[in-house]
Amino acid sequence: MIRAALVGATGRMGQEIIRAARNSTDIAIIAAVVSAQSTQLGRDAGEVAGTAALEVIVGTDLAAALDGADVVIDFSHPLATEATLAACRQAKKPLLLGTTGHGPALAHQFDRAAREIAFLVAPNTSLGATVLLQLARAAAAALPRDFDAEITESHHRLKNDAPSGTALALGAAVAQGRGGQLTDIAVMNRNSGAARRAGEIGFAVVRGGDLVGVHTLLFAGDGEELTLTHRASDRGIFARGALRAAAWLTLQPPGRYGMVDVLSAASGC
Image 1 (cartoon, rainbow, N blue to C red):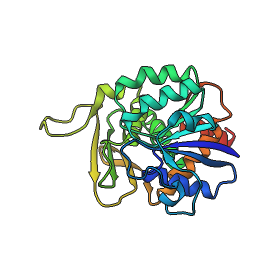
Image 2 (tube, helix red, strand yellow):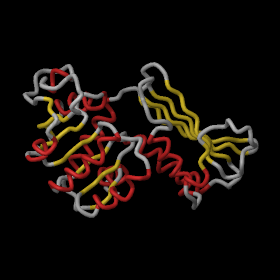
Image 3 (cartoon, rainbow, N blue to C red):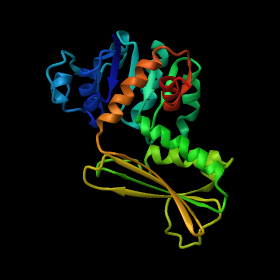
Image 4 (cartoon, rainbow, N blue to C red):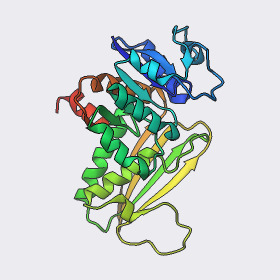
């Protein structure tokens, strides 16, 4: 049984992962880490997640949690990522980072971590969303450049980062398919009133209710359009994907990985 330390254990995704691990025969949650400000400190992680007692107490000691773990899963907050990275590098533990909303300042730390540990960055741990990114890249490369690309994403009212990490990854896949960089062609809003520039990738964001996650990529040409959509109706898909990826990561050498690597291994490609 693979032993996982879960950072951000009492958040939406953390609780989903605890529930999903209950049904796993491959991986178990043996430590639950949260911030010092959490109101759930000292409680049983299973009870916080609405399941039977897990006999894992919610705490703040990341170093102690890593001591008995084979892999670390982080779905906490981008402000905690730097500390999690440092702790995993120090302890030589594989890390699956599912937290989104990181700024470019952490890019060099991601590169350094990947030289020392198996490090998987996953803005979306759904296998279906992973395929969507591959389709986006392929479609962008195949379609003429005069097909305009627009991305729309919808999430629950409490999601902080916008556009979502998945939407940005989708934009990066389109840019890569066209041989460019997203930072050069991304448009996050249309408030300027300027006409659409050729080649740019536009983003639109919806926040409301308890929407789990919908991502749509539109290629609009003259007289025709192509739409690619991934719709998540159950947050459990992300939890199951994260556990699958974490188990896979324990077998990998140091390096930077993504969900596409997990998917390739699962399909044998």
